[in-house]
Length: 288
Length: 283
Image (cartoon, rainbow over all chains, first blue to last red; front, top):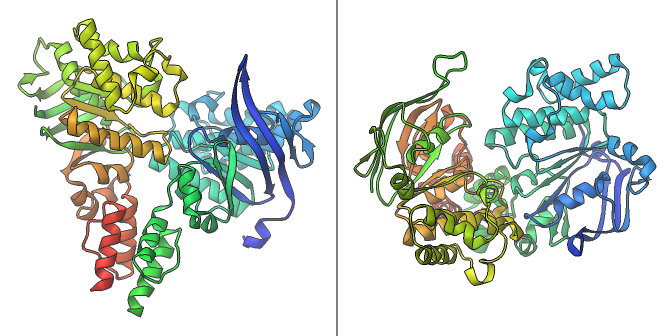
């Protein structure tokens, strides 16, 4: 899909001056403050931050799991604080969590995927159609009649994604959905997510602390201590490495290497992907 | 103390339809002073193997020697074995249980027969060596601490009993980059002072490459390589034939080589990769 055609100007989620803190009795701990952010239709947006930076709190504010203390979050124009419309909001913004085992509700894969649309009161025939399509999208069609607890972590997370897709949301949020998986599982999920965004045009918000998951994003928001401290295209954000470092994050390996070569006096561009780096090193060698 | 495993086999649910071979004729030696990495896909037998090392699993067939103690013998002093081999499980912060940090860390030593004073000293030492001050947090509930601190307390709880060998199962899982680095440099520090031998189970090849001097690879319960990280990631085809990954720096080195830019260095970390590239650019 053409890049420009994929991301439109339509704002699907908007956070405006959002503050939120957690309260239990006297005890107040800050979640996030002063959050302004827009998610555009078709976009692949990554929220990066260390443990405790407030990134998961922000994710939960974006689909009405949490309601702002101050400011407003709207999903396609609907205020998430409007109790009468909360189901509408949540059916538009689907969320996949960290632990695959906590997200399975049924003992057969297809029933698990059908659970969401069943609750929405969708007619049986259409549910069938949705389940088939959702499982196909995540590449799990052959496991349709199987049991979720026989699957690997990566496969379970793909089922969790299918279960969200079957609700036909406008946005999918993945809240550290690869954190508990092994490298193979992580690759499976990232391939699924990229396919969803690039081929199907789904709007994706990915919450993570893995730099390599952020490289392909359209835009990155860096969170530190409850605030957004940097935002923009991946390369622009990573170029600002002091801010990346202050947020407790590390540059992608390719960036670290290109930075070291630049500092050693070589004339090559700052790279964020391995391929960019390798190509620019070869070009450099030819010039010398 | 040397650890030696000989022809180790283990089958779960033997003689049932659910029978599964977890270890298949595994033999290897860990020398005192080693930092050994154990790698392999999920389900390859890594956890089954590490659980054998402090006798959490009874040996079905084969032998393990911890120094001169034979774990397959009829009578084994389990307490002694577990005191010598400290084990840190995955997500150890979920295993904290006492109402104060001090009590949690003292629990191990007391079980191993340390007196009250001795246990208190051991706890203070252990907490100090993981970068925590007993005066500051000793009386706090472990559940008031941050995730990173909780993991440190859990490590302190294991090393307080002064084991000779420390086994860590995915010690950095779920941590952010800074948390990962903290835990790994802590392990390197401990290796200089507290414990003699470290065994790390990990899916993260960057960590294995950077911190281990030896690595063994399990695949479907079989030991298919016993080598150095350099050999494994640069000179064998084991990685290509299993579900393992290359360390990120080695991936870049391989891509450069495809483009005709060869580097001599094993490139197991960023510094080595950069100096390899600089060397080649200058030549």
